[in-house]
Image (cartoon, rainbow, N blue to C red):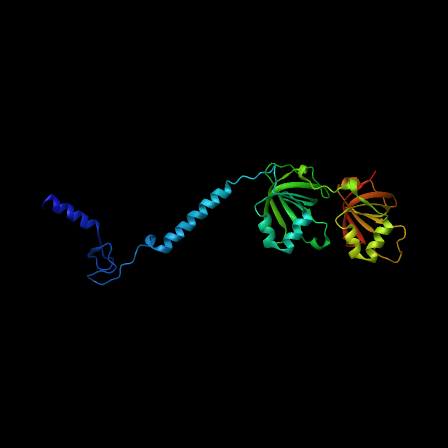
Length: 289
């Protein structure tokens, strides 16, 4: 056999393959075996659906690797917000809130309500949100040993949407009070405790328009002290009215430790409208010396 014939045979062999049914050599391009008639199927790796699947997997892997290497700018948070605001937004429309906050650097201000070895809770003041918290997972090495329930803090972390319990979750958090949302105590609305309570008893809608969401300053006698809040009772309170008081939650729980029942104090805090147990509620309050 001359060299030309050998080369031709080699080319022919490269273009041939055995039939998987009868073993006769057939063209690699054949759709059926001319000897036995068996249909020749393409290998899985050559089928269109397999190629598309591999492309999708490759894109997913690349995206995951890129996402894992994403850098977050803790010095310039995407959002500065309070616990109540973010919980209200997730409860109102979780899809819209997720689009707004998910995977963003969020600086969130709230009051510590529970501390565990793995995470801590920031609670809402809104009574409608009593079931929900913002769950804070601290960054590795972040020291929380000095924190206690009742402390108001601001943490910066990556929003991871909600847990199965409806809590909003933040990961890799760091405490940074420079992003704290502080009430405007210097421009508080001064109102007598009697007038404040009466306004809510007479017309809650009008009272909310005047006071809710604003910093209010008032003076009254302390009628009750709990571990979380104090109650101020106006002078003209009806003895038959079971809730004629102002429920006051502190900005810093330590500031209220010296408050005694029967003493008269002046406080400034954010009005949260109608209280849970009492006529009206103030949050993030400070004692005016």
